[in-house]
Amino acid sequence: MAQIQVTDLSFSYEGSAEDVFRNATFKIDTNWKLGLIGRNGKGKTTLLNLLMGKYDHTGSITCSTAFDYFPYRISESDLQKTGEELIAEWKPGAELWQVLIQADQLEMDPECLYRPFATLSFGERTRVMLAALFAEENEFLLIDEPTNHLDIKARNIVKKYLSSKKGFILVSHDRDLLDHVCDHMLVLNRETIEVQTGNFSSWWENKERTDAFRQSENEKHQKEIGKLKAAADRSSRWAQKSENSKIGFDPLKEPERNISTRAYIGAKTKKMQARVKAYETRISREIEEKEGLLNDIERVADLKIRPLEFHKNVLIDANDLSIRYADSEQYLFEGLRFQIKRGDRVILSGANGSGKTSIIRAILNRSGYHDTADSRDINMLVSGRLDVPAGLTISYIDQDTSFLAGSLKEFAKSRGFDESLFLAVLRNLDLGREQFVKNIEDYSEGQKKKVLIAASLITPAHLYIWDEPLNYIDVFSRMQIEKLILQYCPTMLLVEHDIRFQEKVATDIIRLDKA
Image 1 (cartoon, one colour):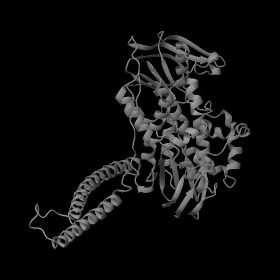
Image 2 (cartoon, one colour; image 1 turned 180 degrees about the horizontal axis):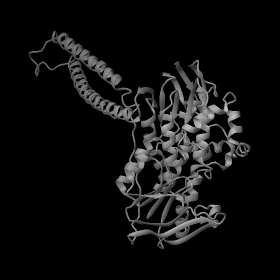
Image 3 (cartoon, one colour; image 1 turned 30 degrees about the vertical axis):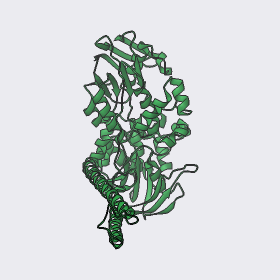
Image 4 (tube, one colour; image 1 turned 120 degrees about the horizontal axis):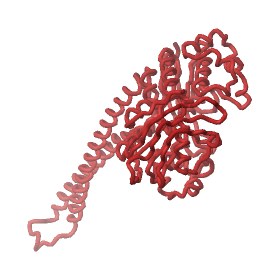
């Protein structure tokens, strides 16, 4: 067991006007199972890279333990290598038998180690990397979003595996994973960094309680400041009025007053001015105590969506639906039946490769949706009935973000959006204004997803089709989107593997199994 001590850590990217970290100080134990959470763009991956020693910084990071990082970097040429060859490069000191032990715990077919990496599914690639990552002992492991693009079965395998390990930082936005795996949380708040014992749910419960207390204290301070300012203003006016009365008086109107009265008035004025000074001191103290109370409170703005109401009750009707591709005799699935009616929120669930995205592609093709194109569409063979009524307007989020490039202004213009409205929605999704001047290709994956979500939200539609919209999206934004969906009840077809999200928003789940 060792400790990692971070002291006065400051870092900013070259050319950036804002610091990612400024004088950050915290201490963690290398025996912990530590969940790392924070808003998109807050610096989670940057922190892992700083621990790895990849960036110059001020302040100190002290630790006697070596680090290793997931995911390993894969080049185009690496895709043609086998897992065994890659592991030899990633972990030169690891023996094959050590990797095989981890592979067994990950329920991975050992044959995956001997196939070209390009032929492996996302789940298989993740498990090969994790098997390599944990093959050696005496390292503190930095695990960056291991469940993105994984289906529920693969997520459960990873969840079970990580639950049995210790000595790592896990960056994840999956609340279910954080709850089952972590015993401590490292949280990048808006202004501070905190370390807390427990999992995500216990941290969130404490945060809600703390935020409510801080809001209450802030309101008390605000009221007290208001009272003190009013009292100070009254005393100041009285003092000024008294001071003005020292000089000059009419003996006929004030026969009882004489020149000695001036000293009395002066003393009275001085006393009132002292009272004003005391009020000002108390006001300053109240303001000082109030300062910083709300700095770390997550001010989650309410999102809006403008669903259109279609004249028919059934928007999608599939009967005896089967899909395969021309280069394969194997059907992804056969004989599928489902309907999507107005107000339904249907989630497609199944293993990677079971046909979830293919169903979406088939619906988009039938509807005449042309904003995106997939070269595989021309090879898709659809049989059975798939009815999509004429005139149905669809708003679509693709799981792929690689096509995003250029400025937000250019993106808004290409989609015919009101730029001001588009940027306002992005601000509500907590995309900082400093990001508005950057090109989208320079965004983090979570920020790119927010661009697509904002685009969908401002597109009035009868049906919203979202394919893995929450990959890389931070926990707070996930909750924000859940609240939006429950409030406006748009008709939706979604592919999303986040269990908590499914439990919150789904009215029906269509489970696909490979034929």
